[in-house]
Length: 544
Image (tube, rainbow, N blue to C red):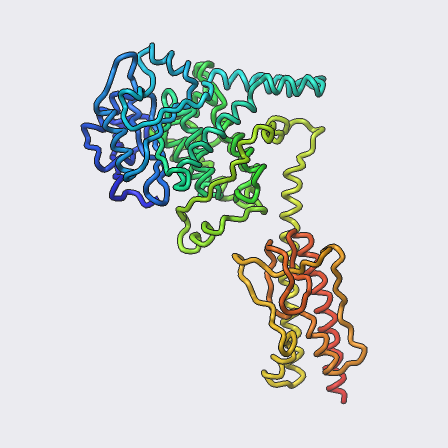
């Protein structure tokens, strides 16, 4: 993200004296002095002062996170007010700063009576306060318990099942999180105002982590890649102190009231986006299932502990295995064959492994009727329900492998055509003329993996046919005629828009791997026939 820069500088928290649940390195506004930073930390719950977690590529709109202020009924902090003003000024001469409280207003008011609370717009100038109605950990825990109870009942009717799923409110809570994240991500774009955001809940490690990480997933295509998604979890969940040990109940000493499926909710929201837009994500749903299991099994040290400081004190990096090492070793199991990166991201990726661009997901991901239960997670022990989605991905992956094999075989046949042509004793110029598609006809262009490929687009592509060239007479004219209808250029197989080949109108590829493989099977058949004819002609010419 180009940090540090002129507006945002690094703040050393390696001793964890500023905040013991924050990472050792923080980014804060350059214009905020240390007195302001410490004063803001003193006025925030658990000393979790506002810090940067993501910055827009234009360097203006920023996403910050913190915990709730200790405002109570009458308390104020000049340093905390100045800290929010510094965040807005660090974004340039932008609009007002959005302060997003993910809690319902009633919960925030209750906390205010306990000495905590929220930002008063009459005290904090130049801010817009918005509540997002996301329930607390206790409501989420009860929701999942209701959902699992009905799924584990083998005798439940369809009517009772739908009613129980609706009453559990699990899907409604997911929709609230997705809507909150999209509200933030969409308004950070310059076209929607380019607003900067400060997000918090109560302590800033549950709902704040959900909304901030999901908003970045929606707007930044890097976090939708295999490595980027791991970096997102590492940054916004592990480094910023989500209490995995407590929320996942990894030890018996954990208070049962502290256990809550907050991370499961985030994975479910990510699965919702992946199901709607599979081409936008480099990883598949199998990776989400593995992350769920890793976070709750204690098999890997990555998800043990409640903060970076606690993991360092336990020495987990020396005593346990890392989940990220497991994913790196088994990367092929978690890659989505349908992934197609945005054009701007693909171009930027040629120069850097971590391009910083934006590609906002479409707004329909928030539509209420598109939310459904994550069957692969909640019903994966139900043997009567096949995993259709995973099977489909595997079929597509197999087709892509077959397509690559056919492409390699077609290239081999083209090389044989060239070799047999050379054996005829022709000059280089004559061989080029022989292999040309036609005298004045334009050759089919070679395109790399990032370009679209030319394909046939007849009125009914399913009726498109290609007749294998067969020479009745083994003459140079007949072979040249056969060559004139066969593409002898290397053409890779990738998805692309359908169009007619400018050279020979042969079906080169299509929008599905299956049709592309069939098209190249036809080409290979034609090339095999051509090679046979060339070889027979060569033998006859040698005999003569």
